Amino acid sequence: MMGKERKGQLSFTLKPFTMVMIIVMLLFLTVYLNSSETKKEAVKRDLEVRSAATDTILILANSEDCLAYQLPTGVSAYANIIDVSKLEKFSKNYQGIEPDCARNYGYGFRVDVSEIVMGAKGPREGKVWSFGMVNFSESSANGYFDNKISYWMPVALKYSEKQVGVGEMKVTIIDGELERVAGFIDRACMMGKTRSSNQSSAKIQISYPLSYIDNQLCIGMKNKDCRRTLCKLEMEDLKAAGNYRLTATFELPDKLTIKT
Image 1 (tube, rainbow, N blue to C red):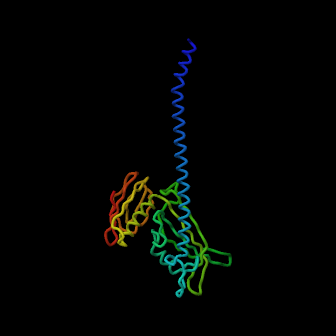
Image 2 (image 1 turned 180 degrees about the horizontal axis):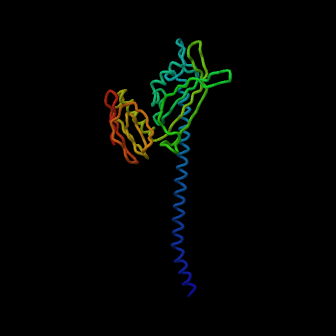
Image 3 (image 1 turned 60 degrees about the vertical axis):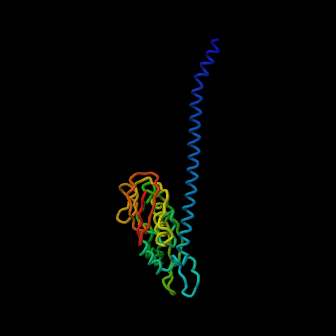
């Protein structure tokens, strides 16, 4: 009789313990599965960013709409030969914003082209041309983006029919919330300018306040990352992190009204 009572007491004691262990195991399994999915998404995004960096540098160097040199009588551009006159225009016209010819609206990028000059003491860096994004953090640990990848390749610099130099082109791709929001806004601006659509909307997620200051879209608290947009914006600051649905309405000649 005593044995049965003890067995019943032991069973009564074990049941709550067993339930707790089952709950703990389920929680562990849920966290593990979520962590695994998060890692998969991170790897997928990283591959997408790398692919975008490769595509961008090749388009810039080989598309005649971008920097590629083309013979006046020819129909095709040379591979990896940059027209320096185009490079001069890009470095002047695209400070703080990416050129349309290679724009990826999911990311931002910066381009640095360095001339390599051969001297008595060996090669040295000559003139440098830069365009694209300007104000972004140096690292994701201290900034507001998720990933930053840089690719480079050697290029020829065509000054004229008789003068050709050697250089290096580096493209830095920035993957972050500011770039994705700016991409939506700039796409809406382009659609308005080309009469494709006067209104666009998208769901966006931000982890830091978003504001429009001195004709720049900025993200962050005290030290902000900022960038230009194709259109002038009329928008209220998004002061809290969260998920938003943005609606962009275009007005001629280059104004976007952003509402949530």
